[in-house]
Picture 1 (cartoon, helix red, strand yellow):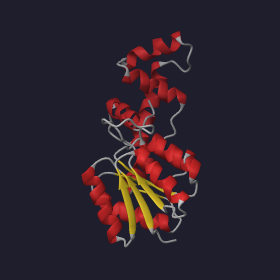
Picture 2 (picture 1 turned 120 degrees about the horizontal axis):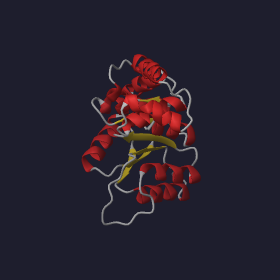
Picture 3 (picture 1 turned 180 degrees about the horizontal axis):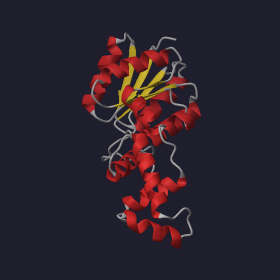
Picture 4 (picture 1 turned 45 degrees about the vertical axis):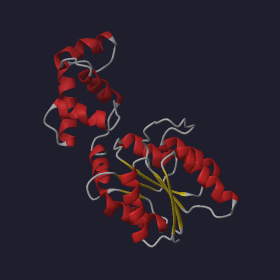
Length: 222
Protein backbone atom coordinates (compact mmCIF):
# COMPACT_ATOMS: atom_id res chain seq x y z
CA UNK A 1 0.00 0.00 0.00
CA UNK A 2 1.03 3.62 -0.47
CA UNK A 3 0.36 6.16 2.23
CA UNK A 4 -1.63 9.16 1.03
CA UNK A 5 -2.88 10.68 4.27
CA UNK A 6 -0.80 10.88 7.45
CA UNK A 7 -1.53 12.37 10.87
CA UNK A 8 1.33 13.54 13.13
CA UNK A 9 0.71 13.95 16.88
CA UNK A 10 3.72 15.71 18.42
CA UNK A 11 3.79 18.49 20.99
CA UNK A 12 7.26 19.87 20.19
CA UNK A 13 7.15 22.15 17.16
CA UNK A 14 10.75 21.49 16.06
CA UNK A 15 10.18 17.72 16.03
CA UNK A 16 6.87 18.13 14.25
CA UNK A 17 8.56 20.19 11.52
CA UNK A 18 11.26 17.53 11.08
CA UNK A 19 8.68 14.75 10.75
CA UNK A 20 6.66 16.76 8.23
CA UNK A 21 9.84 17.30 6.18
CA UNK A 22 10.38 13.54 6.02
CA UNK A 23 6.75 13.01 5.00
CA UNK A 24 7.21 15.46 2.12
CA UNK A 25 10.47 13.80 1.05
CA UNK A 26 8.63 10.49 0.83
CA UNK A 27 6.08 12.07 -1.51
CA UNK A 28 3.07 11.66 0.78
CA UNK A 29 0.66 14.35 -0.46
CA UNK A 30 -1.69 14.85 2.50
CA UNK A 31 -0.45 15.31 6.06
CA UNK A 32 -2.01 16.87 9.14
CA UNK A 33 -0.29 17.68 12.40
CA UNK A 34 -1.47 18.47 15.90
CA UNK A 35 0.10 19.18 19.28
CA UNK A 36 -2.66 17.48 21.33
CA UNK A 37 -3.90 13.89 21.63
CA UNK A 38 -7.56 14.97 21.85
CA UNK A 39 -7.20 16.90 18.59
CA UNK A 40 -5.54 13.90 16.96
CA UNK A 41 -8.49 11.67 17.86
CA UNK A 42 -10.88 14.34 16.57
CA UNK A 43 -9.06 14.40 13.19
CA UNK A 44 -9.25 10.61 12.95
CA UNK A 45 -12.99 10.62 13.73
CA UNK A 46 -13.57 13.34 11.15
CA UNK A 47 -11.65 11.36 8.54
CA UNK A 48 -13.87 8.35 9.14
CA UNK A 49 -17.06 10.44 9.08
CA UNK A 50 -16.15 12.03 5.73
CA UNK A 51 -14.95 8.74 4.25
CA UNK A 52 -11.40 10.13 3.95
CA UNK A 53 -9.62 8.11 6.64
CA UNK A 54 -5.98 8.49 7.57
CA UNK A 55 -3.58 5.75 6.47
CA UNK A 56 -0.95 6.30 9.17
CA UNK A 57 -0.69 7.90 12.61
CA UNK A 58 2.76 8.96 13.85
CA UNK A 59 2.64 9.81 17.54
CA UNK A 60 4.92 10.58 20.45
CA UNK A 61 4.21 8.92 23.81
CA UNK A 62 4.90 11.86 26.09
CA UNK A 63 2.90 15.09 25.85
CA UNK A 64 3.72 17.95 28.24
CA UNK A 65 0.59 19.32 29.98
CA UNK A 66 -0.27 22.99 29.44
CA UNK A 67 -3.26 25.29 29.92
CA UNK A 68 -5.55 23.11 27.79
CA UNK A 69 -7.41 20.39 29.67
CA UNK A 70 -7.09 17.08 27.82
CA UNK A 71 -9.07 13.86 28.07
CA UNK A 72 -6.22 11.88 26.50
CA UNK A 73 -2.99 12.61 28.33
CA UNK A 74 -0.40 10.68 26.37
CA UNK A 75 0.33 8.72 23.23
CA UNK A 76 -0.55 5.35 24.73
CA UNK A 77 -4.04 6.59 25.62
CA UNK A 78 -4.38 8.01 22.11
CA UNK A 79 -3.40 4.68 20.54
CA UNK A 80 -5.91 2.83 22.74
CA UNK A 81 -8.68 5.25 21.67
CA UNK A 82 -7.71 4.99 18.00
CA UNK A 83 -7.76 1.20 18.09
CA UNK A 84 -11.40 1.40 19.25
CA UNK A 85 -12.61 3.45 16.28
CA UNK A 86 -10.16 2.58 13.46
CA UNK A 87 -8.53 -0.75 14.31
CA UNK A 88 -6.79 -1.09 10.94
CA UNK A 89 -5.00 2.30 11.10
CA UNK A 90 -1.23 1.92 10.80
CA UNK A 91 0.52 3.20 13.94
CA UNK A 92 4.10 4.40 14.27
CA UNK A 93 5.44 5.59 17.64
CA UNK A 94 8.26 8.16 17.54
CA UNK A 95 9.42 8.70 21.10
CA UNK A 96 12.43 9.15 23.39
CA UNK A 97 11.07 6.40 25.66
CA UNK A 98 13.36 3.37 25.58
CA UNK A 99 12.03 0.97 28.23
CA UNK A 100 11.88 -2.36 26.44
CA UNK A 101 9.05 -3.72 28.60
CA UNK A 102 6.82 -0.78 27.62
CA UNK A 103 7.73 -1.04 23.93
CA UNK A 104 7.09 -4.80 23.95
CA UNK A 105 3.65 -4.13 25.43
CA UNK A 106 2.82 -1.60 22.70
CA UNK A 107 3.60 -4.17 20.00
CA UNK A 108 1.95 -7.06 21.86
CA UNK A 109 -1.17 -5.46 23.32
CA UNK A 110 -1.90 -2.47 21.08
CA UNK A 111 -0.52 -3.95 17.86
CA UNK A 112 1.50 -0.92 16.83
CA UNK A 113 3.28 -1.27 13.50
CA UNK A 114 6.54 0.48 14.30
CA UNK A 115 8.64 2.16 16.95
CA UNK A 116 11.46 4.63 16.35
CA UNK A 117 13.39 6.04 19.25
CA UNK A 118 14.32 9.74 19.12
CA UNK A 119 18.10 9.61 18.93
CA UNK A 120 20.99 10.04 16.52
CA UNK A 121 20.07 9.17 12.92
CA UNK A 122 16.37 9.06 13.82
CA UNK A 123 15.39 10.79 10.55
CA UNK A 124 16.87 7.90 8.58
CA UNK A 125 15.17 5.40 10.91
CA UNK A 126 11.85 7.21 10.55
CA UNK A 127 12.02 7.01 6.76
CA UNK A 128 12.84 3.31 6.93
CA UNK A 129 9.98 2.71 9.35
CA UNK A 130 7.39 4.45 7.17
CA UNK A 131 8.55 2.54 4.10
CA UNK A 132 8.49 -0.79 5.97
CA UNK A 133 5.02 -0.18 7.42
CA UNK A 134 3.70 0.77 3.98
CA UNK A 135 4.71 -2.78 2.94
CA UNK A 136 2.75 -4.25 5.88
CA UNK A 137 5.91 -4.98 7.86
CA UNK A 138 6.63 -4.08 11.47
CA UNK A 139 9.64 -1.93 12.29
CA UNK A 140 11.81 -1.20 15.31
CA UNK A 141 14.82 1.12 15.22
CA UNK A 142 18.26 -0.45 15.24
CA UNK A 143 19.32 0.70 18.72
CA UNK A 144 16.23 -0.89 20.27
CA UNK A 145 16.79 -4.16 18.41
CA UNK A 146 20.28 -4.30 19.93
CA UNK A 147 18.83 -3.68 23.41
CA UNK A 148 16.29 -6.47 22.97
CA UNK A 149 19.01 -8.91 21.91
CA UNK A 150 20.90 -7.96 25.08
CA UNK A 151 17.84 -8.37 27.27
CA UNK A 152 17.06 -11.75 25.76
CA UNK A 153 20.61 -12.88 26.46
CA UNK A 154 19.42 -13.51 30.02
CA UNK A 155 15.98 -14.66 31.08
CA UNK A 156 15.31 -12.92 34.38
CA UNK A 157 13.65 -15.07 37.05
CA UNK A 158 11.60 -13.77 39.98
CA UNK A 159 14.59 -14.62 42.18
CA UNK A 160 16.83 -12.46 39.98
CA UNK A 161 14.42 -9.54 40.21
CA UNK A 162 14.21 -9.88 43.99
CA UNK A 163 18.01 -9.73 44.35
CA UNK A 164 18.36 -6.76 42.00
CA UNK A 165 15.49 -4.90 43.68
CA UNK A 166 17.16 -5.30 47.08
CA UNK A 167 20.45 -3.98 45.70
CA UNK A 168 18.58 -1.09 44.09
CA UNK A 169 17.03 -0.22 47.45
CA UNK A 170 20.48 0.08 49.03
CA UNK A 171 20.86 -3.32 50.67
CA UNK A 172 24.42 -4.66 50.69
CA UNK A 173 25.03 -7.97 48.95
CA UNK A 174 26.19 -9.59 52.22
CA UNK A 175 22.91 -8.54 53.91
CA UNK A 176 20.65 -10.21 51.34
CA UNK A 177 20.87 -13.81 52.73
CA UNK A 178 19.38 -12.77 56.08
CA UNK A 179 16.50 -10.99 54.33
CA UNK A 180 15.77 -14.00 52.10
CA UNK A 181 15.82 -16.33 55.10
CA UNK A 182 13.40 -14.05 56.95
CA UNK A 183 11.03 -14.09 53.96
CA UNK A 184 11.55 -17.86 53.49
CA UNK A 185 12.87 -17.35 49.98
CA UNK A 186 15.18 -20.08 48.69
CA UNK A 187 17.99 -20.34 47.86
CA UNK A 188 19.20 -17.88 50.46
CA UNK A 189 22.90 -18.64 50.73
CA UNK A 190 25.44 -15.95 49.90
CA UNK A 191 27.19 -18.23 47.40
CA UNK A 192 23.90 -18.79 45.51
CA UNK A 193 23.31 -15.05 45.34
CA UNK A 194 26.86 -14.40 44.12
CA UNK A 195 26.56 -17.10 41.44
CA UNK A 196 23.27 -15.67 40.19
CA UNK A 197 24.61 -12.12 40.04
CA UNK A 198 27.72 -13.30 38.24
CA UNK A 199 25.62 -15.21 35.71
CA UNK A 200 23.49 -12.13 34.98
CA UNK A 201 26.52 -9.86 34.62
CA UNK A 202 28.29 -12.35 32.37
CA UNK A 203 25.21 -12.77 30.12
CA UNK A 204 24.83 -8.99 29.75
CA UNK A 205 28.55 -8.22 29.61
CA UNK A 206 28.63 -6.18 32.82
CA UNK A 207 31.33 -6.12 35.48
CA UNK A 208 29.56 -4.34 38.35
CA UNK A 209 26.30 -4.82 40.22
CA UNK A 210 25.59 -1.11 39.72
CA UNK A 211 25.52 -1.62 35.95
CA UNK A 212 23.07 -4.47 36.34
CA UNK A 213 20.77 -2.41 38.58
CA UNK A 214 20.86 0.55 36.18
CA UNK A 215 20.10 -1.74 33.23
CA UNK A 216 17.06 -3.25 34.97
CA UNK A 217 15.78 0.20 35.90
CA UNK A 218 16.16 1.44 32.32
CA UNK A 219 14.13 -1.43 30.94
CA UNK A 220 11.44 -1.31 33.61
CA UNK A 221 12.29 -4.68 35.15
CA UNK A 222 12.41 -3.15 38.64
